[in-house]
Image (cartoon, rainbow, N blue to C red; front, side):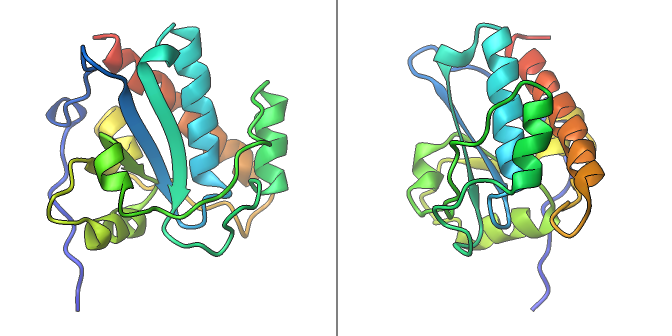
Length: 176
């Protein structure tokens, strides 16, 4: 069975606004929740904190699999984040749960396989909207490469990308 991805959207076609009555809940999703999504969570937390938006957000990350459930992020991800003053060492991997589709407003996938996996798990009554991170942040339907089988430099490159996307998401939330 072939998976069909939804049509690509410009970032302004993916509404991203802060609700007046509650925090906006954002979930970053990759395959195992030990590389890309913890880095994206850490970068977004930092960007939101600098902008004074942290109290108006719920931020988390998860994986499509439970292979690493309960584990900290990959040591190379922790080291890359630490070099930039981000501490992601206390994060623990967890799988996407059915309740996440009700608890989160936005699910931002790192690549097409993650987005397709979310679509397959999405219950009919889901409230969360899902998109590729870079599509939602920048209007670019580009995946974030998985650095797991790479070197430390690959983790640095992923962090560069997700940090830029986090700043752009925060800018959109601030109306910019």
